[in-house]
Image (cartoon, rainbow, N blue to C red):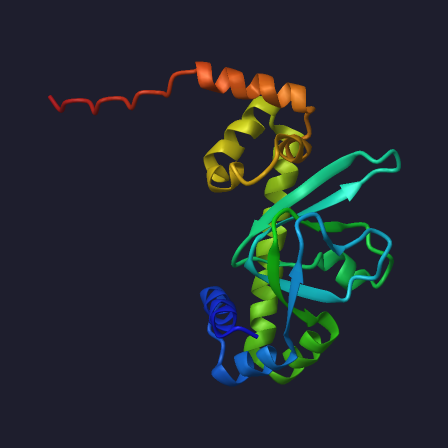
Length: 208
C-alpha cells in the first residue's frame, strides 16, 4: 500500500468523524491495493458483492443494466470516495449493481465481512459506518427526488451546478444515462443552456 494512499484514506475517514489511530491501523491491515484499467469492472451484475473500495486515484460509475442492455447510471465517484454498493453487500444475493472504472483507477479494497468484524471491535468504526450509511441514504433520497420530481432541464441544471468538476471526465452518453435522457436530448439541453444568459443578481434595495 502506498503511503500516500493510506494517508488519503485516513484523511477521508477523519472528515466523516473521529476515528482512533488504532482503528485506522486495523482497517489498513485488511486493505490491499487494487488497480483497474479504464473500462474494467470492479463489480459485475450477478456477482456476489464482497468488497468496499476507497478510490485513491481515478473515476468510477455505479449503474444498472437492463435486460435489453440499456444503461442507467446511478452515480459517479472520483478520488476520495468509497464504492462497493451497500445494497448488494448487505443482501448477500447476486448483485444488481455494476461498478465500472471510467479512467485508470487505483483503489484500496477491503472485505466488507472483515470490516464488519472490525466494527464489532471498534465503536468509532461502527459510528463511522453508521454516518456513512446515513450519507448514502441522503444521497439516494436526493437522487430519487431528481428523477421523480424534476424535469430533464432541471436535472441538467443541477448536474452543471454540482458536478462541473467531473463533467469533462465523463462521456456524453454516460452523462445522458445518469440524467435519464437520450444523448440527443442531452445535446439539446446543452445547447439551450449555452444560449441562456446567466441571471443577474438583484441589487439590494436602498433603505429609506
